[in-house]
Image (cartoon, rainbow, N blue to C red; front, side):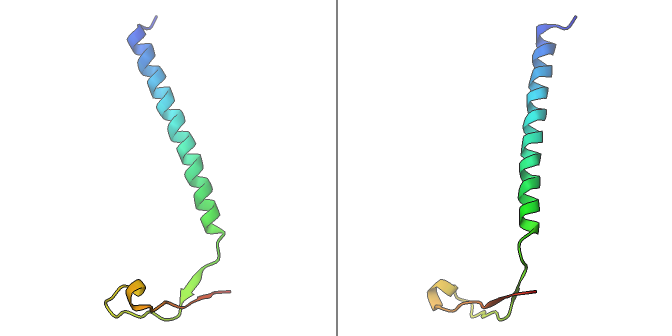
Length: 65
């Protein structure tokens, strides 16, 4: 027969295992969703050393087929 402490430890381990499984399923779903997105190529990079928000420059992207 198990003591109350051993039972509590097993219960805590079970809850941690369940939480890891739920988190793993969530991350797998996010990974599969991201895999289905179309890839993009950067056609031009303007690197002036300043933030694009400050200079008004932008990076052009084109969807790759």
